[in-house]
Image 1 (cartoon, rainbow, N blue to C red):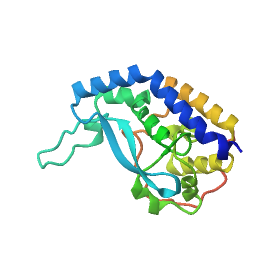
Image 2 (image 1 turned 90 degrees about the horizontal axis):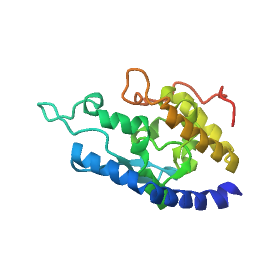
Image 3 (image 1 turned 180 degrees about the vertical axis):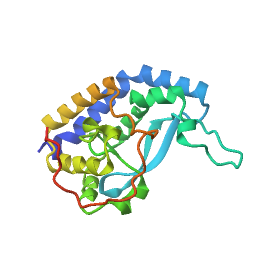
Image 4 (image 1 turned 90 degrees about the vertical axis):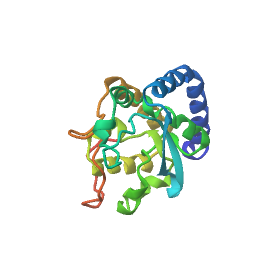
Amino acid sequence: MYKKFVKRPMDFLLSLLGLVALSPVLLIIAITILIQFGHPILFKQKRPGKNEKIFTIYKFRTMTNKKAANGELLSDEIRLTKFGKFLRSTSLDELPELFNILKGDMSIVGPRPLLIEYLPLYNEKQRLRHTVRPGLSGFAQINGRNGIEWEEKFDLDVIYIEKITFLRDMRIIAKTLLKVVQRDGISQEGEATIKDFTGSTRSTEENKYVNI
């Protein structure tokens, strides 16, 4: 009942309240980005959502557009600024996704929306992550975020969608706030965020994590 009748209205209300309450923060970040990077303020990218429907995700920009002599963009590590690292470590760069939630592209809690090019790489069970709206945070984010391997992330996504409840969503939201304060699992070792997903090496197995 919660998943069918309550989750979406709750997402709409919480995202609307969040945008109103955080509007001064959003404005300060936007002005700072404009001063440091110039236009555009937002990073926009196509991502697959529920039923693999493509939508445009919004984030605050965290990298410059610095290019090499041949005109190609420099690596993420070079283009990621000190302020950009701060935005990512505090998850403030994710705040514009509240507009995605308000529009119905995303949910407060759900599997994170990943790149379109990953779609052909999922195994059958991993593809189940697209049977629900992607989330601002999710079960994988409170169990390691970018510090765990892709296979573990997808296992956790499947565990979540198999049992979506109000209490579980509230616990994930609470633990997400704690993770943000602790700045835990921001990136994998040696990566700006996480290495690219190149395909599954196994079928999804029983996950080692305990349900919440």
